[in-house]
Amino acid sequence: MSLSKHLELTGVSIEFPTPKGPFKALDNVNLKIEKGEFVSLIGHSGCGKSTVLNIVAGLHKATTGGVVLEGKEVDEPGPERAVVFQNHSLLPWLSAYENVELAVKQVFKGQKSRAEMKSWIEHNLELVHMTHAMHKRPDEISGGMKQRVGIARALAMEPQVLLMDEPFGALDALTRAHLQDSLMEIQKDLNNTVIMITHDVDEAVLLSDRIVMMTNGPAATVGEILKVELPRPRDRIALADDPQYNHYRHEVLSFLYEKQRKVEDIDQHRTVKKVEEAAVELPKKRAHG
Amino acid sequence: MSSIRMTLAGVSSIAGVKSNDTMSSWLKRSARALGLPLLGLVVFLMIWQAGAKQIHTSLGEFPGPSQVYQQTLSLIADHNAERARESDFYDRQEKRNAERIAKDPSYEAKIREYTGKPTFFDQIGTSLVTVLAGFFIAGLIAIPLGICIGLNGALYSALNPIIQLFKPVSPLAWLPLVTMVVSAVYVTPDPLFAKSFLTSLFTVSLCCLWPTLINTAVGVSAVSPDLQNVSKVLRLSWGTHVVKIVLPSSVPMIFTGLRLSLGIAWMVLIAAEMLAQNPGLGKFVWDEFQNGSSDSLGRIMVAVLVIGLIGFLLDRIMLLLQRAFSWDKKAITR
Ligand SMILES: Nc1ncnc2c1ncn2[C@@H]1O[C@H](COP(=O)(O)OP(=O)(O)OP(=O)(O)O)[C@@H](O)[C@H]1O
Ligand SMILES: [Mg+2]
Image 1 (cartoon, rainbow over the protein chains, first blue to last red):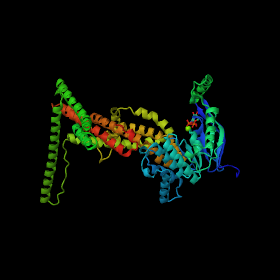
Image 2: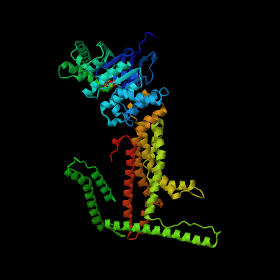
Image 3: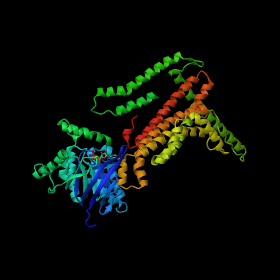
Image 4: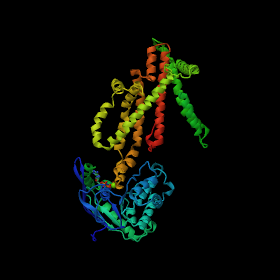
């Protein structure tokens, strides 16, 4: 047991039942993650990133293989694997504070006093700079603020693993940069294990210790893993001219756009050959859409 | 009455004027808010007046706006006269009793109830009490049942055909059954409620509980999968899940159902009162129809307008409640 890692995905495959028979979304995904590591999942849309995350979260069950966290098999969702959902998923009838409170009350029931809970909730909203609007409802705050509350809610559960599904996907560049910086700070302080899905190559290189690049679906699996050995704290402006940083970027880009080129995503008129590939791929896609 | 409402709307738009608004744009807006409905009303009154003159019934000309106005005044006068008679009656009775007691101290005073004919306004009161009680009972049944059905897919499948079968049944079909059942079951020497009241009440409840039931069930069963995932990740217990996630998220749907139900309840009640001769506005209309005096049509028209106005006010009240208690302000349109 002592040899096993903090979080391990072993031979994870999943088949979704569809009207046209089972659809194999993931095939033999293997991944070992250390405590406190920041791992990004990157890959083309629809390859199965969310599915991987949901399996770790326990929201989906792997058809074969499984996930082990700290020597215990993951078989149901739980607060020790907090999820930041792609679309924030705040309860619309509760204020930011109450949304975090729901999680804190559930996780620290009988462990923290009322006063302790209150200050813990406020502390977590403070981390994402949301103290000023903590009594507002989700429909009264901006998309970026909602996302921040979602992050605060996840952090407040003190999870062993923080799972984030494109947490900054819908945000403008400025807010996104700001939240990325906060996330790096928070992760440095708390030393959580983080798995983050992203579509953004810069984001992946800036934040991650390792970038897991997934092959295209169906039956997607881990294509390559890139270790990012940039010293922390990382500064986005300084890194912009850093050859090492640009090398990593290049690696990821070439994986995505050369090795795992997704025909529909790129100009289809470039060569006849690609159009033919598309003709083969498209019917397949539609069948599983 | 609708002109009162429009004046109110006008006042609130005056209150809403901001200093940076130019006068002309404010005028334009208030002309829209006030002028167009007013114009619509005037045109309607003109057509009504002109059209009414063309229709000759066995009871005389169809009532136009002016007759309706006169009949409203006469109904108010009737009501006041009836109240005066009633208080006279009690005064006389008290006096008589006092005299008897003065003569013979051992005399036990009898208090007799005044038994006058209910006026138009008494009938309004009766109808309002009945509709609210019927609606309340319907909600009391429909919301909990809707929650159960929404939470339990098997129960939903089991009950859905029954719901779909009973939902379109007209109140007139229920009424004889309800009347017979009430007569058979409700036999007490000293009834707290009149049988006619109970008949109207249950008919209203039976007819109006369906929209609340269905909307509640749909609201409860259609909790967004994202929120369900939140609940799973937090490992909320079943009870907490229902209380913290399912119920709040279905509140907007429940209110939509309640609003529909109240509208139906009011319509059903008038029909039931007419058919069963149960006290209320429906009976008033029916009595006037049977009465067949030259005033009758005018009075019925007053009743029609009052029925419409009350229905409208009930809906507004529900809307205000919905605004106050529902988190989803966007779902409330009009
Ligand atoms: N519940 C399901 N039933 C059937 N197929 C599913 C289900 N969930 C996902 N899939 C399929 O599995 C594949 C992977 O989906 P997934 O949501 O994991 O992709 P993704 O990489 O997260 O995409 P994106 O980047 O667009 O979010 C897709 O082809 C999708 O159609
Ligand atoms: Mg996804």
